[in-house]
Amino acid sequence: MDFWDLIIVSGRQLIRHRRRYLGAGLAIALGVAGFLSIICMTRELKNNFNENIDLIGGVTIIGIYFDNKRAYQPQWFREQTLTAFKQLSGVKELSLTTSNQITAIWHGRQFAVTALMADDAFWRVQKFWPESGRLFGQDTVDGRKRECILGRELVKKIFGTTQAEGKSLEVGQEVFLVTGVLGGVTGSDLANSMVIPLTTAQDRLGGRIVADRLYLRCATWDDVGRVAAAIPGIVNTFQSPQDLHVEVAKEGLKRVKRLAWLIEFLVYLATGATFILGGAGIWNVMMAAVTSRTREIGLKKAMGAEDRDILAQFLTEALLLSAGAAILGALLGRIVIEGLSGIIGRHPPEALYFFGLTLAFLFSLLTGVGAGLYPAIRASRLEVITAVRYE
Image 1 (tube, rainbow, N blue to C red):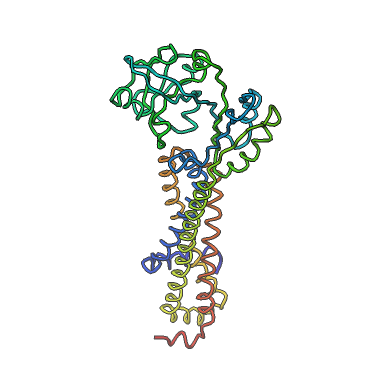
Image 2: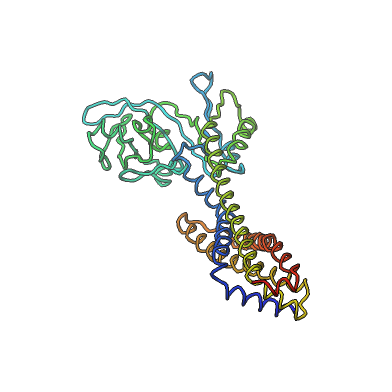
């Protein structure tokens, strides 16, 4: 029997007994779909997870500051240092800030307020959003405009309401327009603080204001340790590192990594178990096929079929079953990938999809060979007389 005749005959057998093979085929298909989804979407999901990691503690954010309260001479971050940080691999965004205690006046009433002075990147680094109104942007920073953002609790304290946009506050003999109320804040400090543009504060508020605090957002949690280790050396290259402090949420980072590893391990375990179940299913249905087709095997041998012909036919049936299931799994995997891509707004490279598809087909074929080999060998070794007389 030549190759194509073998394929045709084996394919007909699968179609004829499709109900018998359905369960094993679906198990392999689900395994392939899960495997493709993991291979293709792990990086995209991880990147999306890292971008929103502030929801579970902001572990990808590194805080760097000079302790100027203890220093003889105030320190701040020089332009060369900031440029070097931006060029450091693994750094996605950085924000330059400082803070001070000020007095805000509204309708003759004075309020002692913590003012955070920041650039427009502060919102992107910390992943904050306006609960109402708007946050100031680059045009406000570059234009040194007198605008401010208030925390929710501070708004209630000053105005007695959560709606404050459009109102004015007197700060350091300057009138600031409230443009929004800060959202996304989980800590009480910022909820009771005012945020104003750093450039405006340096121009219009009294005293010397130096930007002595920096926040770096890393691209992924895997970059945090390496970036944190490189920070002192970079600072030392361009300025004095005296009284420099680097803050990393180490415990939170460990918990997040442990959780991510556990989830990934369980997904891989479930996919592997699906492949194993699919292989067991193929083994069972092929063994059942050998039993139900014993007389057919005996007749073929009586008509001149050799052991290797019987072996080749049953093994080909197992391979066709696993290959067909892999094709179905590839289609299901593609649907899952497109759905996840639409949800997170990212799409994996096509080359990665085809790489995963190749691996999935190899795993499927190996499963088919491994599960179908013993039944095929058993079928090929049946005695002609015994097989023909089998009832």
